[in-house]
Length: 253
Image (cartoon, rainbow, N blue to C red):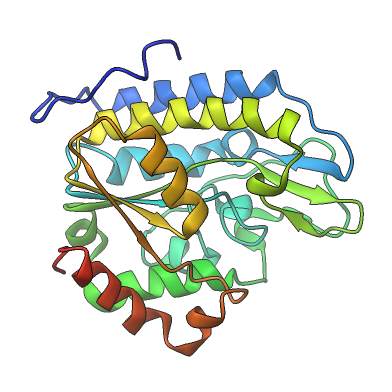
């Protein structure tokens, strides 16, 4: 954690893919020391109970340098919370990414937000839109991951008593600042590993965190619209919108 603020150098040699697992291990340990009070009543960490499919995701698709790294905010209850894969809508993870592995249960599960792993019948809209767009542009996962990688800034899900999702940017300041410091460090070391030309925040929060973390580097940081149905623009043709936004950043598909 103490060295993450060093400046990335162009052409820096990346570590072996096992380094991603070490980054994950350190992140899990660091997050264990945090606590969250009301209105947060339940906290899920898929990097613990859904670690097996996440490790497959890293092993299969996370090796080597990437030109573009896409950063989401945190998991959704019917996506990564179920599959361990960022934006991981169950059907797409199973049938296109070809990932399926046992998933455990979070500590203190919320009765309205069950984790059924790959048996989950609900579909994560954001994940279906994002990975659906990927599938429309790239013939195979290997083609996409030869240039791209998708990660989440924060691996935790936060729920209120009624099951309402609470995003990291709305956590109480005294709880949020330690969380952001830990996630900033993990983001930095992840980007150091991939050594990309572009880091693209999926939504404003992820963009702001990436811009803050990478401000002293030569990496270009940009933003695309979040595919969430809570974003009105995303409900008017998100795939076409994000293609235009990436083109505007100088990223050719």
